[in-house]
Image (cartoon, rainbow, N blue to C red):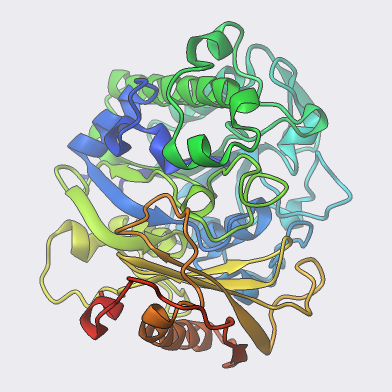
Amino acid sequence: MSSPNVIVFFTDQQRWDTTGVHGNPLDLTPNFDRMAQRGTHVYNSFTIQPVCGPARSCLQTGLYATQTGCFRNGIPLPTDMRTLAHHFNDAGYTTGYIGKWHLADSESAGPVREEQRGGYDYWLASNLLEFTSDAYDMVMYDNDGKAVKMPGYRVDAQTDAVIRYVDAHQHDPFFLFVSYIEPHHQNHVDDYPPPDGYRERYAGRWTPPDLAALGGSTQAHLGGYFGMVKRLDEALGRLLDALKSLGMDENTIILFTSDHGNHFKTRNGEYKRSCHEASIRVPTAICGPGFESGGQIRELVSLVDLPPTLLDAAGIPVPAEMAGRSILPLVRKEKDAGWPEEVFIQISESQVGRAVRTQRWKYCVTAPDKSGWADAGSDHYEDQFLYDLQADPHELTNLIGLESHKEVVDVLRQRLFQRMQAVGESVPTLADAPSLPAGQRKVTSAEARS
């Protein structure tokens, strides 16, 4: 069999629990669910930076946002930074990018200069797709920087372009990165515009428990948001059908993931940029050669692990400088894989924050004297959040400062320091939260390490 084609199907601001395999009862994602069940479902998948540009820099390079320098939106990816496109190009692949980029100079919402396109051969994209398009007004820019007006609802117009690319490259090994803006809000109206008729299908129906408890903008926006997710899944189905009809399905790897989630103004004044599950947990599945019947992976996997995974699956050496690890040993159920017990998250713009998430615990710190827009990191932080995800999966009770959980904080703090050092950050000073009486709560030392 020839080198496998590789497609990244990348959505924007999609919560993990929009999918049926994560318990959503509305049948929004039958194609994703089928892909996850027949291929490999990365059950515990997390962004490492819950905001658009930084997360994209991580997925393109396999590095953390403080390593790429793109620690907040509006910072262009350095032109000497090696991306997935460069690695696939070097291996003889043709490469293409279709959709939202968000890694060029911030003064241009639309055309992206060639030197800022991350090494991709084919280009049909906008730097900030939310500002060059609307639900029924899809405009992107081609290799020559010319505007291309595309008919149909935005998801459909983009999917048409994706299928045309696949059809034109049947005989080339290709790497295609497809970046949708959905289900991100349309900025200028602060709304989630689905296809006509789709909002009505889902408004007032099932609400995720964290949103039901906390409110925010949930009831104003959830119907449209779910409608956008439904159309994205229909687009995934169209792509899968096209590959099957062209006889390409058995030699094409597809990765489905998202840059971050959405908490609907429940944790701060907007939709992301927090350490909470709604902000950092995303749906992820992979199908194709090497991933068929991979089952459900329960280890904690982060966005930075996906670039080495794609290279490894295509038989391309993984660069030593990449910060993540290929998940193929987990897919193959290899023992003693030595997989990390936590994921590490950097948070910007709303704050300068750092967090670790284990199977049971989440611990987050914040830098009180730093600006999330001006500062990439800090040498001093304060305790901010501690959640027991086993007892409180919707993160409604902050345990930080409780005397009963001091040992948990001590253990997680050391893990946080180790992960910060591993990506080139210095060990900071850290101020304890004010001590609070524990009441009936009591945590054992063994639980602190679970």
